[in-house]
Length: 296
Image: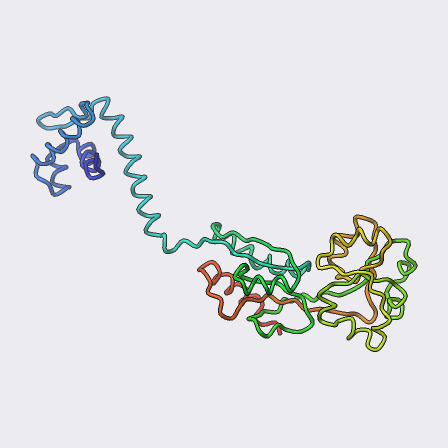
């Protein structure tokens, strides 16, 4: 059964006259009649009652008309979908990020994009800066969100309008917990659990200056959550970002105090300069540019 024959049948049903249907279809009347007879033979039923002036549908013909309409509508919809295939935006976007509230800024940019293009899926990969850069170079990530003191010049980057402030997360019974702020001299008396990233970029050296050699480093971390168990066990206190300390530590009775003077780290969305993006990726870049390109 061919689609065109269903269209022939529907024209006859519409006009209730084979001659008028043939004129609409630019067929001869004998050709259309033969096509309809072949259709009835194929189905093994009578679809039409042919009169001199009017051609009517049989009871079976009425049922077949409903089915033919469904088939023709589905055919048209399928054609439209394939015609729009080039316009369909879909795909997977992989974003690597450490623990930072700057992700909230990125999420606000991506949310409208996801609503407009529901076939795009976003995948978050947690990791420190080294893992993010390594995964970008290997093509495992499309974008990275990194927190650092200076801009990552070897990548295309957009600065996020959110800087993370460092402080000390500690047990509530720590003597420093009664203070409103923690000063440099206080940290020299405290076993510290510090970010691997901060160690790598010598941020503590910059902060403490010549006193850096007096710091007692009890351990390091790349993601903060598991560190709270070290703090609870009395192994030390963690230098970390305020937003993440509030998120992971406050529910367990740990407290956070900001540093004085403060340390702030900037956040950047980065991607490779030679990255070839899908249409979905190009839309993400455009959205990031619109939101963040004016931030220094």
